Length: 126
Ligand SMILES: [Mg+2]
Picture 1 (spheres, rainbow, N blue to C red):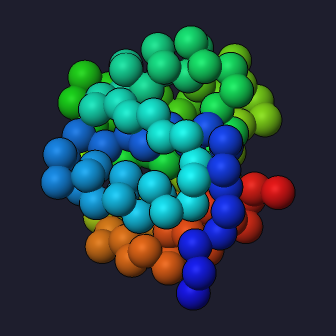
Picture 2 (cartoon, rainbow, N blue to C red):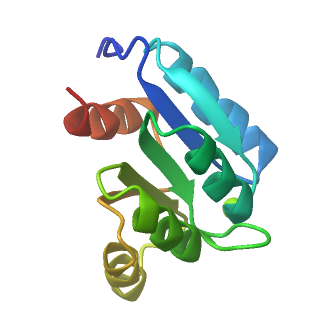
């Protein structure tokens, strides 16, 4: 599948694991999107405040300082239209319910494959 053209669209990648973050950036670079990065839940909120033009956030759940559930809820308080997709290692139904109750639009279960990521993100963007 060809990478969708997301040139100029701002996406925030929130991931504390460096190799995972590099992997996600490498996949998303092919789309032409403008990529911002955060390594914890508090930084995710700060970057979201500073960049009101972010279209989509790819949010890890297990993060230092503040977890992805809390961070997503707080970002949602001032950015009601932003798309927030969770990325989680857990496949339990309770976690999925928690994810959707925390204001996420959707989720991806790790390991995340490139086609999956592109397909999921593209579905939410024009
Ligand atoms: Mg993590």
